Each structure stands twice: as C-alpha cells, then as structure tokens.
Length: 185
Image (tube, rainbow, N blue to C red; front, side):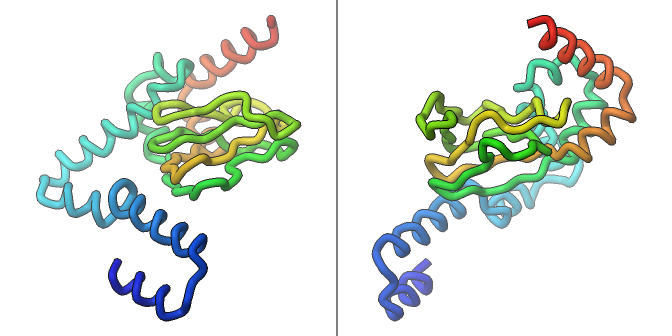
C-alpha cells in the first residue's frame, strides 16, 4: 500500500482518482482478496476448507426462494458455477433495456435499483439477489442496477444454469412452477 501511495504521489494523481484507487485496495484487502481468504483458510485441511467454502456459497443459493427447496446435490452444482466479481462504486451491473443472461447475489456492499428515469426505487444489500428472471426467460432488463459502494457479487450465468437445469429434474420442475405462478399474476 505504501508503494502504491508513493507511486500515485510521484505522478501527481488527481485526488478523485487517488481516493478511488485507495478505496478499492482497502475494500480488496479487507473483504475480497483471494490471497486474504487463502491465508485465513490455508491451514485448514482441504476437506474442511471445501466444506466452509461450500457453506458460504450455499447461504447465497438459499436466499433465492425457488432454490431453497432443492436437494443439496442440486444446490452444490449451482454453487460450483458461481462466479465472484468485484464492482466499484457507481458502476452499472445491469442496464435497463439489455437482454439478461445472468442473475447476481450480493455478497457484500450495496446496489441501487433505478427505474427508466434513473430514479432510485430500492437498495439491495448483502444477502439479496437480482436478475433471476433472466435465467428462466429471454427478457429485456426492466431496471438498471448500479453499485453504491464496492461490492462483492456472485454471478450465475444462464448457460451454466441451463446445464444444471438439464441435469436436475427437480430444478426444471421448480422453474415450471415459478413460471406458472408468474403467468397467473
């Protein structure tokens, strides 16, 4: 960190950019660094470490009501394809009008939901999810999602989801139920 500060000072980096870089590294080092997590977990035996990592992922999967009743085997398959990403403040995760191909879980941070007038209609915090309809249907996004802070998100892509859907009849059945319930509304 001191080398980074020296580098930016030497090059007279503007304060706004300086603050963004420092903010990212503070977030990275305290929340999302793979090296940090690896260091904390490195002394655990591999099976115990895998169980702990699976537990954290299962918490995310269980947040989604239509995933919750699925078998552990199906949920573990979903956990294995979650893609962790870090998003900086004021970045769009989803833009209204785009075709959706993934859903997201908020592992850390805050995002805001913006309507077509770019007005905030909701905030989503750790332990929430968004974009799930895109996994079930080809739809245009009806709102934008923008980060309000550094966020650790977990992305579940449509291709991975469809592969799991074909492998687990229980998931296919649950998705049909969800679609039928939404069509009744």
